[in-house]
Image (cartoon, rainbow, N blue to C red):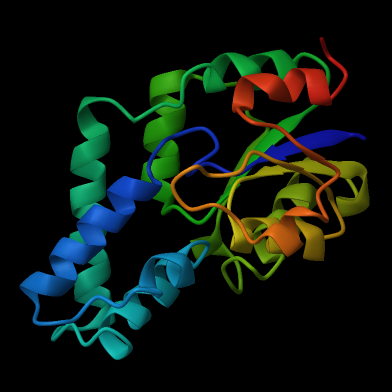
Length: 212
């Protein structure tokens, strides 16, 4: 293994529920209807992808560009005071970075990734948003781009993920996947079985990687 690539939402920040709350509210305000499958369907989507989903599938009466701007603005406001960091996550990334180059491969917009890095000051070699690549998770694009920027072959990387679509993306990139199952949105058990290791919480990751 030559590098470790972390997902952001649900792995380093407890933001999946915040995304859900904000999107639900915005859809309701614009006359749309939330569906039971909507939360899981959007996990891993890039900003353009979930914005189209809110309009075309959930019926929000606005444009994808406008709804994306509104949702991201509200998420940025939530992050402004303090990102909802998962306990121990920042220390884990620092510990891992002492042995391997680390990166972030996230479906979050660039502005939120930057806000997280500004607050934490983590020594991340590169950070890629699915906004910057061809497709969001479960497509492997964001992981492949992160590996490329690190100068490491994808098959020589470990990926740390929490949701079904994230796990699928990292597996499709041929990476060794370390799963930290999201307790609020548990991943598909059949997909989880394909992980190299499953840990209960992020602070167990160093042990799984052989660091402690």
